[in-house]
Each structure stands twice: as structure tokens, then as C-alpha cells.
Image 1 (cartoon, rainbow, N blue to C red):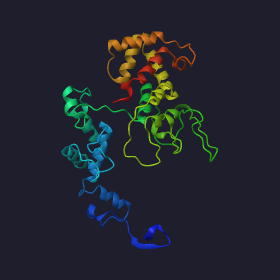
Image 2: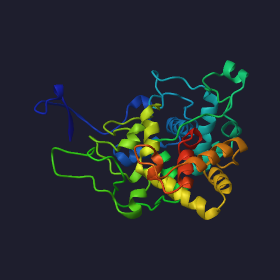
Image 3: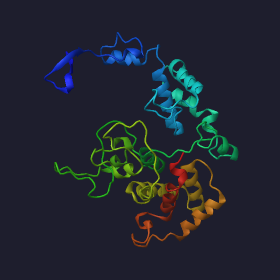
Image 4: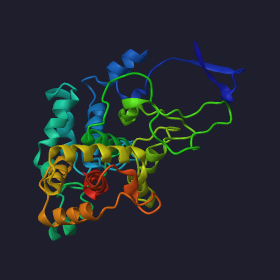
Length: 327
């Protein structure tokens, strides 16, 4: 049995309590364990779970929820900017797709709202300055984990195997230390260091630095949404982190194997990374960089000393463009 402790003192137990949920949320007489609680959450008599989940998926795809306060659907949270749309999405998720997320996400990404351009018109800025009503495509930076995974995937380095223990990819020396034991950060061997970000070993008191720079949480407390920042240290991570250098080198080798002509290499890399053809203006600028990069300079003078070839340096430039990490 479990008792309510008076003033939190285990020596003075009060009334006996049982598992359950607040009665004002609906019929709760059959909720006596975790399984019954899960079944109650997804019961056809309540739409709160469907609305909450639909709103979270919308937030992930658009960068802003229909209810901005993802963590609070109560009286203290913000009202939906489009309640009818939220109800429609919740209905489709629950009854049309039977809680299956893949077809539900497909519904949204194939919609006109999601596929529109993010370039605003003067009218858009006047009527919907914060894009709360999705008058244009949203501009959303990728998460820390997504950015790293994307660079590795595009370069062909990503190890997408599933399961297994956490891994230790590159990180600066002397960052990961502890006074409680003799544990050390041991760089994972081979392709293990290129596994997806979700498998990175995480220490609460010393989060992975490059991901922390891009607003990954320390995981000391639960966070329903990350606050996106824009700082100089983020640019330094993309420029100097060994993972991104390795990805640029791998991409450079793909460019060299594609063609011996620098122009064709640049066109291939740009289209491969951004999914569209390079404009002549951008192509010329990249070609100028290709022809002027000096890999013989010392590391103090240029980042190029850490790269394999001018092709790798151009790939490194592309990985640092705004279009690479902003959706």
C-alpha cells in the first residue's frame, strides 16, 4: 500500500492512496496500473492525446506548433492559432491513420502549406509577420543531431546501423573529465564514430560540445522544445569540428571520382547537397575558391591545411552555407 505522507515525513503516514488520474479528466475508475493508464490515454472518448501529438508533429515540421506552448494545453497555455485545423489533424491521426505517424506525416508534407516557398511577399509581412498562420514556407534550422547526421549522410560516411552501445565520436581534448573516477573519452574506432547523433555517449555534467553549441539539451531536466539560438561558436563548430572536416574530405573524394573537371565537380556537389542546380554566379564564386585554395599553408593560416584537396575545401564551404542547415 501507498500512503500520503504528512508534511513529507515517512514516519507519519496519512491516508492510503491508489493509482489513478484526476476525476475531472473523465471516467477513471478502470485506471489502476500503467497499462490501463496507457489504454486510457488513447481511449476513443478523449481527443487530448491526439491533439497533443498532432501539435507536436506540426511543430517538428514547421518549427512552430499550432499551440505554441507544446508543454501546456491547459488554461495557462496559449490558444491554438487555428483550432479547426488542429481538430482536423487530430481526427485524421486518430481515425484515418489509426495512430500511425508515417502516413500522418506524409499528409502534412504533401500539403500546399508545407510545400510553399519561404520567400515572403510584402503582404505576407504585413498580415502575418511572424508566420503564425503559415502564409509562407517556414524557415527552420535543423537540430544539432540532424545537422551532424546530414553532413555524414551526404558525404557517404554515415553509419546507420541500429542498436548497440553508445559511441564516442570526435570531441576536443580535456573537455570530458571527471573527479569521481578515472573514466576517459576514448575515440570510437572506424565507422563507429560516424554513427547517428542519437548514439553519441552523453554525460549529464559534460554534454557533447558540438551538439550543445547547437542547442542540444543537457538532459538534466525534461524539455518539451528547444530554444533555437544563433551564436558565433556555431560557425566555428562547422568550420573546425573534425566530423565536418572528415565529411568534407569524403565529399571531396566523391567530387573527384565524379569528374576531373572542376566545374562539373562543383555542379555535382551543389546539386547533391542542396537538391537543385547551381546558379552561374555561385558556380563562378566556388570556382574562384577552388582555384585559389592553397593547401600548403600552415594550419594557423588556413583551415584548408586540414583538408585533402581543393574539392574538399569547396565541399567544406558548401557545408557552411546557410542553406545546408536551414530548412
